[in-house]
Image (cartoon, helix red, strand yellow):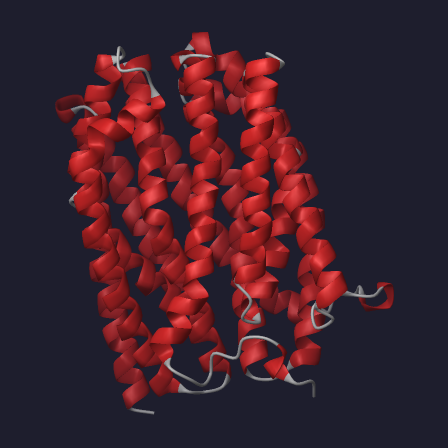
Length: 448
């Protein structure tokens, strides 16, 4: 048996310190990831125009469905890796890395081809306005062509986090974000490549981050690097990997299909509403990203301690994570509420008064409900860590179904503010379901 102290062992030590220390690099990484996306939006909106901004906005949820299906596969694999690491089964861990890498690569290539073929049809199906249809289709086809880089970066980042290293993926993500911004300016402002320039910059940047991540693993981390003879698909692990990954992949896909359908509810309000909505939701993504990071931190912490059968530490970790996310959610809600107008003017010129006004109304209202998202993130991280992935899937499906249905019901009466009300109700239902499930799980633990 290999020495698992080679990286971050979360099964001992101060829970709060471990959770925060592990989460901070991921928080920074998520912030940079959102800067990555937000920089694209600002450059496109400022230097190409609001139609291009709207095209990227319409394309974003479609792109996200494919990307986050892949991310979901990596998350599920990471949970299994974390449990194996916590249990000290490091030889089995290496076999899991091989199994996940081979199967994930093959699946990603097939998905990339399928998405390229279907992109225009999907845009038409969701009612994309004719004046932005071609731009959105070009953007999507280029992004889908680079999905393999998305998979490789997320797979190796997940493997590193599973063994307690959340810092290294951050470094490579920062490099990628900076490169994306530079290339975006070069391709759009100087080379006049239009919306295609934005997509090319994104793919090239992702390619660089994946190459750096792979090189680091093979040079520095023998625990998860593979020689040619170690590239095998273990049938037993494949079954477990599929059990973990398909649920998280389906969950992520359902989440972004829901967002795509909500986009369809917004599209009839016209270009100004589309531009405002998609600018404001980028702000949401930026603000809520740290919640995703603490969710991932709680998941890895919980998974390692489950592998080590340290149930008291699991309960302690949940309580500490909830306290941390509450403080963060309240603080960011105040900042967004007070700074909504200034934030919207980052995306479009102040002369676009209708776009700014719509976006400000959305942001101020949405900020009141950020804390619900925070609670749900910690629930999700906990249940992923203990392997109760069906609970996370059902909760997400409940939330998204309510969000979509109520968005269509409310939007005709309240505009895009109706979408906010729908999201808030969906988050509330999700929290109630997960809270009851958590109560039952803790009761089960106390009786064992």
